[in-house]
Length: 118
Ligand SMILES: Cc1cc2nc3c(=O)[nH]c(=O)nc-3n(C[C@H](O)[C@H](O)[C@H](O)COP(=O)(O)OP(=O)(O)OC[C@H]3O[C@@H](n4cnc5c(N)ncnc54)[C@H](O)[C@@H]3O)c2cc1C
Image (cartoon, rainbow, N blue to C red; front, side):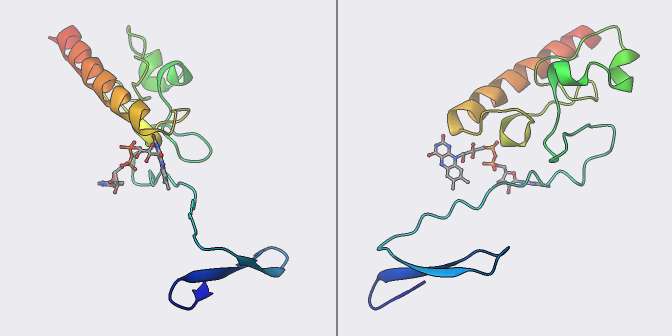
C-alpha cells in the first residue's frame, strides 16, 4: 500500500504466478478468509474436511450416537452433550444474527439434554 497523506494505490501480487499489478484506490477492505482453529479438539468431536465442527444429522453415524438411544440435536456434535454454534459449526450461515440465534439454540439444547439425563 502506498500514498502521500492517505492511501492512493495498492500493489497486488498473484502468489501463484508472481504477476504484480498496481491499482489506484483510496480505500481497502481486507477479507482474508476464515480458519476454524479446531485442531485442539479431541477426535471424538468430528469436523469436516476444512475443520468446521459437524453437528446434527451429519453426526448420526458417529460411534457415540450409534451407541445412544437418543438422536443428536441440530447443534449437537458427534459427542453427545457437546454443542457447537456460530462460524465454527460446519454449514452455519457465517453472519452475526445467525451466530446469536445458534448460541440461544445451543443453550436450549444443553437444557434439554440435562433434563433428559436427570
Ligand atoms: C471481515 C469480516 C466482515 C464481516 N462482516 C459481517 C457483516 O457485515 N454482517 C454480519 O452479519 N456478519 C459479518 N461477518 C461475520 C461475523 O463477524 C461472524 O459470523 C460472527 O462474528 C461469528 O461469530 P462467532 O461467535 O461464531 O465467532 P467469532 O466472532 O469468530 O468468535 C469466536 C471467538 O472465539 C475465540 N477463540 C477461538 N479459538 C479459541 C480458543 N481455543 N479458546 C478460546 N477462545 C477462542 C476467538 O478469538 C473469537 O473471539 C464478518 C466477518 C468478517 C471476518
